[in-house]
Length: 218
Image (tube, rainbow, N blue to C red; front, side, top):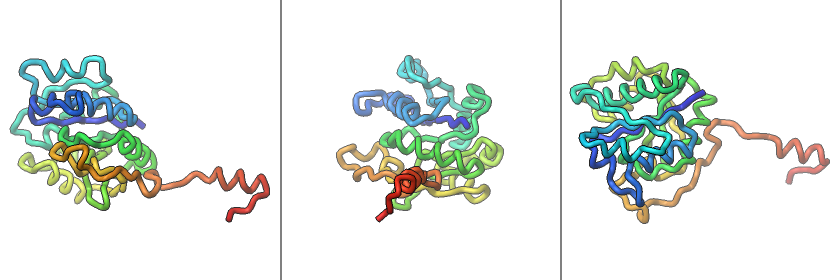
C-alpha cells in the first residue's frame, strides 16, 4: 500500500507564500511526509523556478501543471499520473489544494490507515460532518476522475466523483480539513482528533492482558 500526496497550487505566488515561516508548499510537503505520504508531488506554475527551489532538500518533487484548458480535474489527474510515475505501485493519491494549509499530519496518517482497510473507497475527511481536504482517491478510479468535465471546480469534481464510485466520510476531528489559509491559526477551532479509529477497528490486546492476569474489567 502506497499513498501519494498531490499538492495543487493555482499560482506560483500562492505556492511560495510565507506560511508560519515556510513557503506554503514546502510546509505542506513536510506535513505530508510526516503523516506517511510518499511520493509527494507539487504542481504549480513556476516561471522563475522559485517553487522548485523551495522543495530542495524535501521529499517532494516538482511537477509542471497540465494545460490550463484541462481545468482543475486535469491538474488532479496529471498530479496522480506523476505520482504513479515516481512510484509505480501507488495505490491512492491525496488530492490536496495548497490553500488548505492547516491540515495536521495526524489526519494524513488517519486517511492512510483507513485506506488500508478500504482500498476501493474514496475517503473524504470531515470536521463535525463537513467534508474537506485532502481527499484520498484510489488510483483504480483514475479513469473515472479523468471523465469529469474540465469546467468543474475542485469541490464539484469531488462531488461528481463521489456520485459514481464508492466513497466514505471519515471524521478526523481536524479543523484544518475545512478551514484554509483565509483563517488565521489563532482563529482555528481546537484540534480534537478522530472520535473512532479511522481504520474502523480497535485493538483488543488490553482485554487479553487483563484476562490473562485474572482481572475483571469494571
